[in-house]
Length: 117
Length: 112
Image (cartoon, rainbow over all chains, first blue to last red; front, side, top):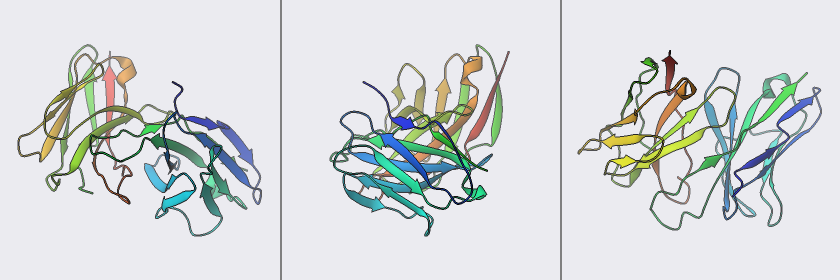
C-alpha cells in the first residue's frame, strides 16, 4: 500500500509565478491536510479537506493560497504570484474517515520543497 | 486541543533506552496522545498513540499516567537513525477538530 505521494519533491519558481503542489492520499483515505514548514521553524497547519469540501482552512493565508480536493484526482495546493517568503517545505497528510473514535492515524508524505528565486 | 509541554532537547547514548517526557495536564477525556517524529528534511513519521492504556509497537512504547496528565515515549534501544525532533500531540476528534497541532517538540540527539 503506497504511502502519501507528493509531487513535485522540489520546485523552483520565480517571483510572481504560480506554484502547484499535488498530493495523492493513501489508498482508502478520504481526508487530506496541508502543512507548511518555513526554514528552521515548526510545522504549521494550513488546511483540512475532504473530497470536494474544505473543512478547516483556518491556517491558510488569506490571499494567493488555495486548495482543492476534487472527486477524482489528487489534492492540489496552489500558490499564486509567489514571493520569496513562500519558500518552504509543504507537507501533505491523509487519514481515513473519522467515523469512529478508535484513533484514526494521520500519515504524512515526504514533502514538496518550494524555492522562490 | 490540550497543549503539551516537552523539553526542547535531550541527548541519548546509542544502544540505551531513550525516555521522552510530555506533560498534557489539561487533556480531556476524548483526547488521544500521539507521538510523531521528524528526521531532518523528511516528513513527520507516526510513531504511536494511546488513550488511557500503555501501548507498544515495533518502534516504541507509550506510557500514560493514570490521571492522563503526562506520558513518556520510550525508544528501547536508540540508534543513530533515531536522531530527530519528537512531537507529543493531543488530538480531539470532531468535525472541525481532527487536525494535528504541532508544538516545538524535543530535539533528540543520539550519540555514539
